[in-house]
Length: 190
Image (cartoon, rainbow, N blue to C red; front, side, top):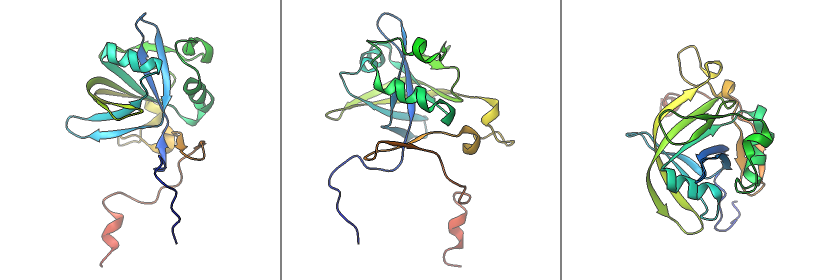
């Protein structure tokens, strides 16, 4: 039997993404989010949701660009910290020792130490209430060679991303491989 948990943000799991931006003064900043995902294939797009009072909100609105930086589990402490402290109050790159890299494609920095980066130009915003959804077109994906499978795709085991559990406010690791998508289901009905 299922128990009602009410209307809440309990979709499981959510990604731990660090959003890179430049503020009005040109200072590189980063902020951790969990409300984000792929939203379109052609053109390739992601969506992130930010509150208007966040330092990153004004930066993305002004620069019309952001990066999605996907940290590995090796950077759990840094990812958590940059989600707790405002870029208006601290230089998060200096405090964490992470390195901002100026994108050549969009007006936003990315995090050198994180193994996967999506460089995005802002396409549209949607006011949803407490959050504004930013839809960004992915203009490039940068991946460390170390996280690529021999076939060239991203190997999630090598990426070792962090996932977030809303409600419990916990970070987790990915689990085991269950099977090949668009293939394992063929066993039904045979």
